[in-house]
Image 1: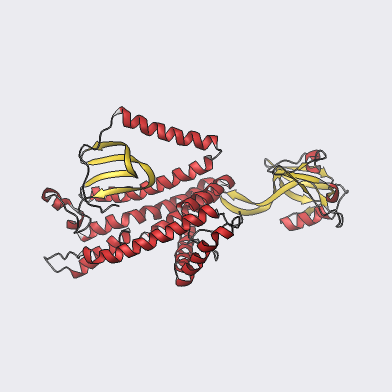
Image 2 (image 1 turned 180 degrees about the vertical axis):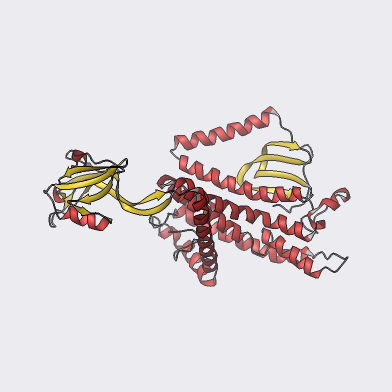
Length: 441
């Protein structure tokens, strides 16, 4: 939501072929670059963040329109216009720098000069409930988005759930086929039992295989809903070189004891989806848990100790390349830190490469983080407009509306804005010098 002066620009809103073609060229170039550089996960995350920004602004836009306020602009980005079109009194468009978005509503504060003919439809002249609704709408959209993402996780993608050990991939032995490949094991096989013993966890399975180099084991696996019995003979890992990610790695210490290996990557976590009605309950519980974690994480990160720690991280970033950061601010983890938009894209791309479920949870957490932070009672955040609306309502008397002198708040707002810019630049520097990583990534 934008409270800058001015309701629009003369002559804006042209929707000619030229501007539309220019926009198409920019979008096509971005997609082509992402494909050429193998950065499609990055593009997916950037588009998700852009959608999140514009849905935030859509909350302000829709509630302002519903409330009868005059909305003159709804734009993605800042700087020079790439394309725009006018429909009625509102101009919609895209600008060259996709670093955010904005909605311009007439008369957001008493400082703004408004045409007398528009004064009755300005934000500042609207009733208290309507001003409160418009100010809350942006963060409200983030809360709704977070819930929808979590619902999609449980209903469609499936939430990570502990299951029986499952083969995620087959390893490659430099000397030939691995025991798993010879036996006919395949990715996706669920290991049910080994030599008549039921398998319930990864550790017991790995220990059993390690203890039987050179001895045939009877594996019962579930594949496509049917049980299959396969004979697998582990080989001595001391004499095996396995290729992982294009690099050769010896499977066991050559100087150590014999250790059986069969050449598989295992997991005990699978995405399990539930019905839509059950998903509502799961999403609600996860929403409450994430909300609590985000709120406590913010309190931790923006405490004096947290800010001191952040300053130390920024100062040491140039000397700690490769260590990464292990979480987002507000995720509730003890190692949480402050991320820039670059950091959010970095961990988002990692999540997209790993699993759709990881990406959905991360985007839900980002939405909650932005929604909560945006309600901090300080201009230019939406929470500042909420605080002003409440203060004006408390000071108003029957038949006489009170309007706060926003000019008195501007010095404090400028100091706060400077603080936000400094923290943002620090986070940006840290994420460029020392890229962020998902926990465990």
